[in-house]
Structure formats: structure tokens, C-alpha cells
Length: 288
Image 1 (cartoon, rainbow, N blue to C red):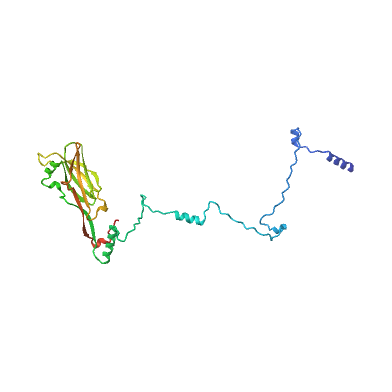
Image 2 (cartoon, rainbow, N blue to C red; image 1 turned 90 degrees about the horizontal axis):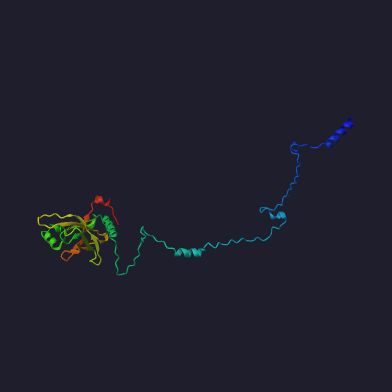
């Protein structure tokens, strides 16, 4: 009985099949899947770090020198030197003008030393020898009466030539003055022509209207007062320099002149010395 029972169990196990729940719900047969092929690994190549002796290659092979070639964009040292020689460095100010000036002097030619340089040299020498320092200040002085309007014949002179210089004032800001003209029309123009070069070159400035003239007498003519200003450049302020000017009054299409009876109004440049106190020597400001 035991033998028959074990044989029956063996036969049942051989005839049994595997039943999956998916097959019960999906009675359609599943297509067989193709087997996945596994690619065998490729042979391993020797690395650079591994010695060549491991593969049986002799180690006494001649080595080949690696030559590095210069790029075409790079320049040689000789070419760089030539480029540096062609380059020039210029120092200019805010207006693009040169900061330096080279002048070659001849044997008989004396160099002109700027005034501020001479001032510093003289100041240093005076301090060295213990002398009191003196400043030389230039100024313009008229060669005619400064207050022409105070002259007794001024009104007569004005009526005869229609325009006349009244007063001139010289200061550090330049030369200012007033002019009286006869009021012949509403539209009028007063111009001052002046020159620092004995009329080789000249400049013009227009005078501006200030007020009507004061009539001191009942029969005095109506006049207008104009004011003008003449700028004086610093390099002109040298002893011996001369300023000349004349006045032109344009009214009703005609020009009337006041040129000091054909001699022009002249102002000459002079200088006077000022002694600087000891307590002010160390606190002075010098402008160049």
C-alpha cells in the first residue's frame, strides 16, 4: 500500500502544471518572449600608466621629442621691439594741448624766463640773505585825465563831436569807463576799438546803456551814458606795455568818433613795489 501510494504521488506531481491567476482572467495565450542576448565584455586595452613591459614590449625603444610650434598670431621678440619703437607716448591736458614744449636756443639768443619763475628765484634769494621780500605789481595808468567829465570844457566838447569819454577806472579786473553821447535817436550803438599792439591787431567791445545824462543847466542837451569794460590779459601786464582805444558812436546811419583829438586814448603799464611783512611770508599763496 505504501509503495502504491508513493507511486501515485509521483505520477500526480509529474502531471501537474503551474496555474497563474493572470491566465484565469485573460484566457488569450501570451506570445513567447525572445531571449535577451547579453553582450560579452570587450577586451581591456592597456592604460598609459601601465608599464609596457607587461605586454612584452621592449623598454629600450628610442623616445621621440615633442616639438611645440608657435602660433601664427604670436609675434616674435624682434617684432615686439619694433612695435614698441613705433609707439609714442604723449602727455596732454584737458584740451588736448601738449604739456611740454621743446625750444632750441641759439648762441646769441637769450632765453625768456617766465615771470613767475623769476619771482620764485628772487624770493628764495631774498629769504636766503635775510632781506625783506618785495612784490612788483603791474598796473595801467592813463596818459590823460581819468575824470574827463570834470573838465570845464567837457560839455562844449561833447556838443561839438556828439560823443565823449567821461571817466576811466583801472583795476585788477581790467579797465572800465563811461561814455556820454547826445541823444539824437532812440536806436544807437556805442563801440570801443582797442589794441595792445600799436594797432597791428585790434579788438572791439560794445558799450551798454546805463542811464540818461543829468542836465545840470536848463539849456543842456539830452545825453545818454554808456559803460564799457576792456579785459586785460595777464601776459600783457609788462612794464612798458601800451593800451590804445577809440570810441565810435553810431546813430541815424552816421558814425561819430572820439579819439582824443586824433591821438587816441592811451594807457601805459607801470609797476610799483610792495614790501611784504615778515609775518606774511610763510602764508603767501603764489599762483603761476
